[in-house]
Length: 251
Length: 150
Image: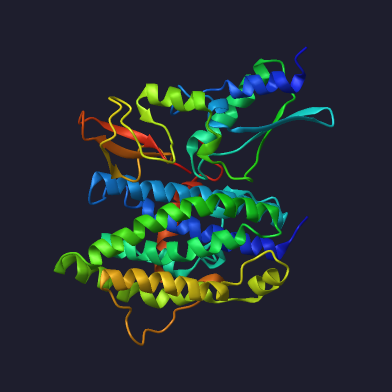
């Protein structure tokens, strides 16, 4: 049965996972150590798996015959509804891990709640994702502490990453018409519920790391509505190139 | 007399994992359900990790094994819930993993699959596939992979 709201909701969660996965995959072959290269690639793979399940589910609920590939490769930048946070460039390793931590701290609160969704498809995907997210947040928290509480150089880089990315974190907790309508029906999780537990975890880790969020930083919004930073279009140009140049190509 | 569903389950469970060929889909606990529904045979598989590429290969291999075993009309479906856990790996599967040189998923402490030593340490929480982490033995000094508990 076509259900445009659930399709839109699954799509935004899928876009978060897809775009962050692609960002992490840009590290492959460039990680600071072999082990971290592998860790980044593994995290990217988990997120890609989540994205595929979510986009497939969005296509099913949309009921217009679009599959995961049509949604991933066939939409333009204005049709993507991911958080601005996940499309931000990798920067250095510290910035990448800070971005990952801010996202993982969200995912680890989202998935357990969504696993109780009355939409069976979303509940099943969330039930798998929660196990993967638990692993991711342990890894990214450990790196934030290690770099924040490390050398003068690593601390400065981690703090610079936090300063750059903090304004994008507020978007996580913004509700809109789609989410509110679905949360009332028990399909979606109200993002506002995640704010307190997210802050508790983030503040504890940042405190241990000796990092401080920038004061007076505003909140950047727009990703959920398709108003993206300049970075997403460039990323999609690379990500979608093959399917745009050779539509339907398979190998 | 073996039922059609039992025979199909046997075929599906015998399919080897493409990455860790000593393990079968049955050892991993991937075959969740085999049922006759409305005259057709439905085999439900569960993926291990959301993004594990082996899941797709296993699905194709199961389809081929079923077709080759006389179940050309069988339908293979994916089921996500309940989510896969390493608790579903069979004891036989765990023993085969250890013999293959990969420490099996155990809730307790890991031991070296080469010398059996208990003095081991984690090198990286991630490994060559989504399901494994990198470890080393402080006794025999050999590195090894350990199946993550999920």
